[in-house]
Length: 125
Image (cartoon, rainbow, N blue to C red):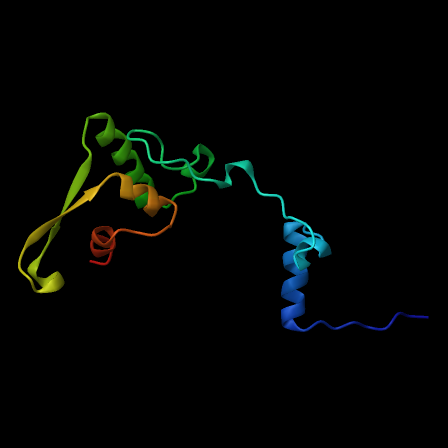
């Protein structure tokens, strides 16, 4: 006797793959049990000159972010506390100007959290 063939919908197949990858139980998925959280999931407050990310994640950064991260560490040890970004007239049609970005906003950038308006303006140019 051959067991009946079970065909999953795409959504069910994706859910089954998610459960397999995350090792979550049915009770955890339904919210009956707490899902354990990694102790490093919290974010430390910004401290000038301190790393902005966990050390094990730094090597996974894209090339330009990694270069920017190394520049931040060097600049903060030299006593810099902010960076100026030049805005051209063609960016906002308000004339040439500078935007000053405090280093503490870099923490939000590296953690992909709420960003300051000046930082968003620079990255959107």
